[in-house]
Image (tube, rainbow, N blue to C red; front, side, top):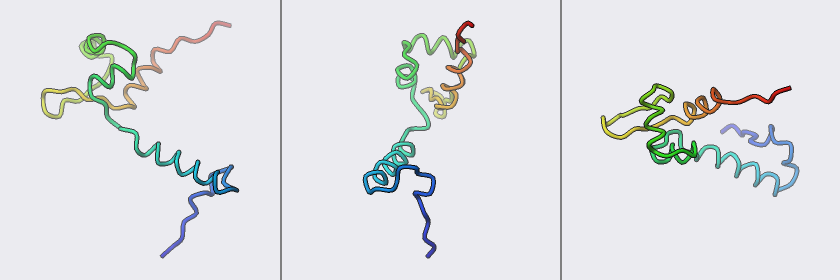
Length: 91
């Protein structure tokens, strides 16, 4: 069995506490949902479910309907929507 070093990218893993924090951050990233339902996506964007429906109707946000009824959204699509609507600071 080959041993792997899970801490080689960690800059603060010289203590046990640092290693625990590093592993906790990995677990947190892996446990995040990749898909959100309609209500969760609306909450994530801080808009109403009606507004999210309007965004979908106008083709602004992609969604999936695997059962033909409920909408599901990829987090990457929601991030893309937020990035496209970013307002840059003026110089």
